Image 1 (cartoon, rainbow, N blue to C red):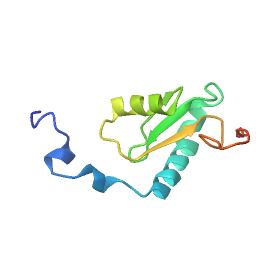
Image 2 (cartoon, helix red, strand yellow):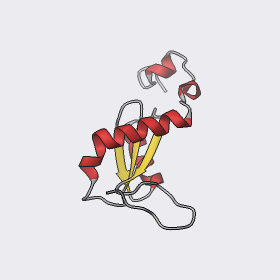
Image 3 (tube, rainbow, N blue to C red):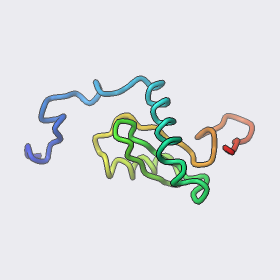
Length: 104
C-alpha cells in the first residue's frame, strides 16, 4: 500500500483502537444522530430496515440486517470504528423474549 492510499490516521501512526469510544457514548451519540438527522428520512417508508451510523461523522447506511447495514457503511467509511445500529420504526434492535415494540 502506498502512502497516498493510506489514511491520514495510518500515516500519523494513530492506533485506531485508541479511537474507540465507551459503548455508552456510542449509544447516546447514535440515538441522538438517528432522532435528529435520520429518522425523518427513513420512517415510515423503511420500517424494519437496520440503519448503521458512524457516530463520528453522522454517515449512515441501511440494510435488511445489521451486518449488511454495517458493510454498506464501511464501503463509504472504511475507517469507522464507532458504529451504532438502529432498527427503523422500533425502540430496540433486538429482543430477548416478548415482542418488539414500535415507536409512535
